[in-house]
Length: 140
Image 1: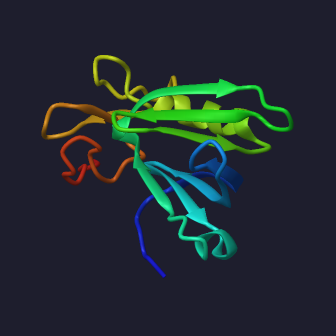
Image 2: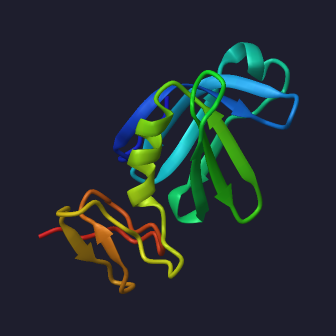
């Protein structure tokens, strides 16, 4: 078991599209620092690995309608990740304010308290560590 000081914001079973013909089932978790996909044991037995995407690495986010459930598409500099889940809209709405905008500034939900890190970036007070420099955020 892994101990963490991250806060879980969203969790649900999902399907991750590894490539066009290959998909893996697992548990998708959004924390205040990353998006995690833990592959279920049966799919892991075929060599499909779990996935961790740092929120600061996300450069694009979109939601698409699917045949059964919405599909949330997360773009990083090196890859496009597609997740299909029943509460896709809820995940998208939770993730959208946490994604960096085109200028690299983290957007926080309206009215949420913010603080400045030693590196000069403004971050939500929900964060224990700065997503840019990794330093511990001091709260008053």
